[in-house]
Image 1 (cartoon, rainbow, N blue to C red):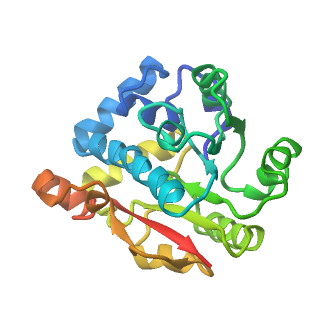
Image 2: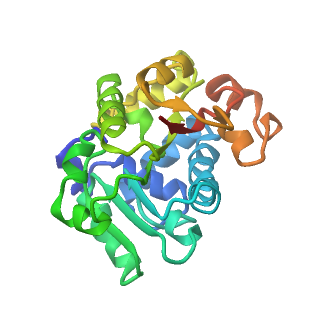
Length: 269
């Protein structure tokens, strides 16, 4: 994710990752993160459900990739803390899950949380440069040269530039085998960046060194090429988790759109 290295270990500066943890109900955050999260929530109360929707959907992703599609290796970029129903909690026994995150503090906490959980690994890595991570000797040893794996980018798209998404899409398309799959969260698609509260939230993240990049659904799809969207298509996060727009207020819909500020998709070759 695109964030200032200095802010990662500075308890006086809010971190997007720790704000995310707080909004999920986690405890690995500082007072400055909680204050920033509450400020964002005061501008857009739906942001808590928006964040939790992304994490809730991971349970569905884990089931689909393993039980339905048959993958037994999942490589998850920008994972955040492995709590609150993350992938390894849901996948069948024997599935290898390789998590990663840009924030070294998150990595440290994550390893403490996971302990000696079998077949689950956590490394420091940058979703902007997947080639660096996938070519690490430790990762190559774990996957044993396999490329028929599932890749996950969930809850990170909003913080990647167009060039960074395009680069990741091109590299992962070449790296994976014909049987590979990429679960991607088109985060923020449908978000109203002209709404005054939305502008204030985006400005808050920019001041933290984690600028957010709002784009349309069509722009996302173009950036993700040559991957193509597999069934069931581009699914709004609300529908993905069995909810609908009745769970949103008029203010929520004005800012986040009827999709719940994002879509999920399984990308294939």
